[in-house]
Image 1 (cartoon, rainbow, N blue to C red):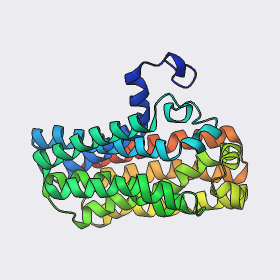
Image 2: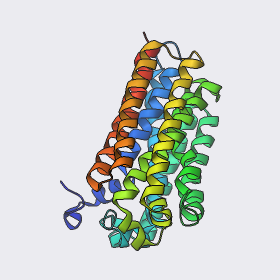
Image 3: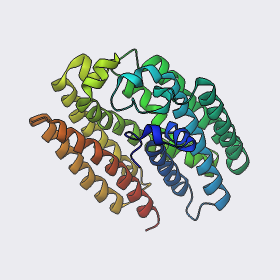
Amino acid sequence: MNLKSNINSMSTWQKYWALTKPRVTQLAVFCAIIGMFLATPGMVPWPILVGGSLGIWLLAGAAFAVNCLVEQKVDAKMRRTAWRPSATGELSTFHIIGFALIIGSIGMALLWYFANPLTMWATLATFVGYAIIYTLLLKPATPQNIVIGGLSGAMPPALGWAAVSNSFPAEAWLLVLIIFTWTPPHFWALALYRREDYKQSGLPMLPVTHGERFTLLHILLYTLILIAATILPFVYQMSGYFYLASALILGGCFLAYAIALYKKYSDELAKKTFRFSIIYLSLLFAALLIDHYL
């Protein structure tokens, strides 16, 4: 079912499911699971793997539900998000808050019981930071919102690591750094081909405030920074040559997209770059996992 074109035919559970931004949540949980496996030389204990992953998923979903509630007026002005049940009024403020509290509380309980209190509090802080600090304060205030606020979205692999080790060692922060530097070029590619949406919403996204060329230059520069960041796990000796080769090949592909965008922009190419960036991150973390067990 195409949820965007069939909002009126969505069942109640599908409306609540849509609030959790499932595609984004899936990528976050995937990176968290990779962090779990990288934290141990053997197999992640099943209770931590299942309970921890579900706990992170539920807390992330709660944060996204709050994000949808806070941004319901903005979402209603944007073609990309006008279909959301929060924007259409299909779900009331009371129901959205209640839903977020319920799944967030269950997520906290799962992390406390199956992982550890450190992971629970860190996950709560991460997604409160996203739902409140980023959404309410940073996003409407500065065109660098995604750069500053990207830390919340970059935390899942460290949360997964902490679920297993009850700590945040340097290796976990290297994984955070990779997603932190990946977020701006990933998001700005989207913002470029959706700039009219953002202009209409009043949000100060970089393509709206500084224009196309400035944004394209920043995508190119951040892609170079990203490639440098992805080499650090090898330099730090937490990964081997398989990962290094994978990171360089994937980074070369991402850079090719960034250069092509800079040389001759088109909305279609920006869409392809945005889609590739998601594949890029998934394959990069998969390479980390494979290399870990070689």
